[in-house]
Amino acid sequence: MAYNHSDLHPEQQSIGHLEPSVGDQVRLGRFLKTLEAADREALLEICRAMAHQVFVGHPSVVRFLMREATVNRTVSPPWIASLAEEMTRPPAAPE
Image (tube, rainbow, N blue to C red; front, side, top):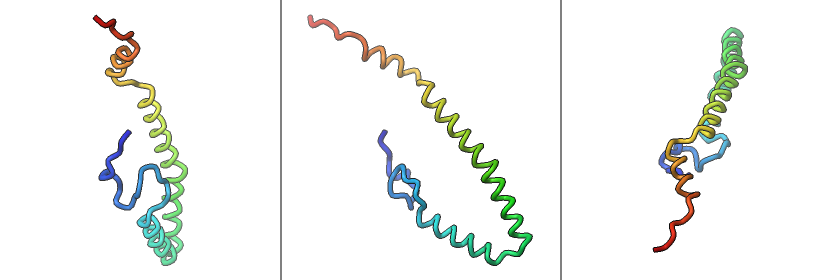
């Protein structure tokens, strides 16, 4: 499958890299500074929100994406059957 590089996020160099971008690192730095300045109640609120994301949100997103990928890999578009038939048909005899 060919990818149009204009579809890439501006910080992403190529398809398929799971490495953090510079922007990801900057956002992490800002977040850590916010944590350092936060009081106990704010830290507990942040921890609760992050725990929900880690233990509930992320796994459900992964399950959804896996289910979608499975459906996309197992359900063929209608044109696949006609293409497969055409490719397996013996060549016509020359006249």
